[in-house]
Image 1 (cartoon, rainbow, N blue to C red):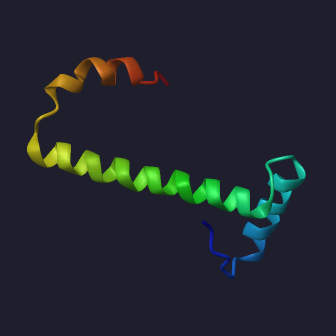
Image 2: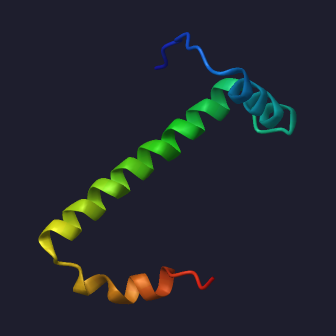
Length: 72
């Protein structure tokens, strides 16, 4: 199920969304839905990181962190 909503966005964001749509990213709804899902994942990851930081129980993640780390 989906619900249609109306939102006001700054002109520069609408231009950016429209450029993505023109480049084949799907409809405006698709672009905004994807952006919100990414933001939702980010917020969940930040909450998980706060839990790990508070508990201090992240020794088991050393190998994963080493694997996922990006050298700059």
